Image (cartoon, rainbow, N blue to C red; front, side):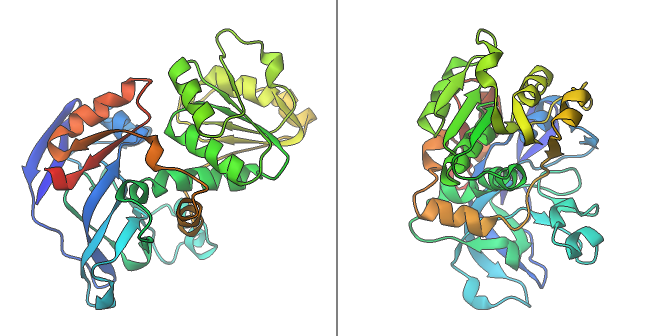
Length: 336
């Protein structure tokens, strides 16, 4: 099979690799679509992301879907031919985190496109049978891939306690911020305020559920006051501090965007208002909700796609994310 392999910062090579063989509990998926994520871009540009360092060739890409073409010895052969969305992780079965249901926090996790585990910018991948989620015929291949960032948004909504009638602030109108805005409206949030420095991204937010957009470079931050929940999808320290200041007493702050490893926080505000501040690290038990929201037309993932590339053009797909008019790039491995 063909695989696009990160061999050094800013260098992707198209290589031939053997098709992987599924373990007894796995399926083999022919990949039809892969979304480009910010973490892929970090690895491509810098060769590292946080504590993860790329020290050997790595296949990037973890937002993916496709068709099951073979199964391991312990899997029902009737699954062959199923179109699926891949939940791209393999937690250990016996960790305390997995046993309590928080398998995304398993310290022994194998996750697509994290050093040590190849991702999906290739024509075939393997995944445990229960993490190959069947999708209805009405859901596109692109949407199947983008169930992954939607799952991040659903995990965020659960942490933030989104509920009907609320007022919510989201900073950062990239793909995750836009997905969070859509989920917020799906959960009945009445006012969705989205802040971003790029006018093109603010315009996108309005098309995908934002009721108000805000330019943090020129707007008056008093317009952001009195929100029930705040989600940062930017990773920008000034945005986090401004967002926390906007949350009403007893509200929630959820940090999703990846920025500096440490930033100063307004501790007195957090204490005096009894704010709940937490982070989101991937997701757990979100795919059924994601598939339902898309299948019922409540969340639109297809409209988020702004560019389609082949395996030979993965480098261009990664570079495209620098354009504020680009929302979500998709790689189709079948294009070669």
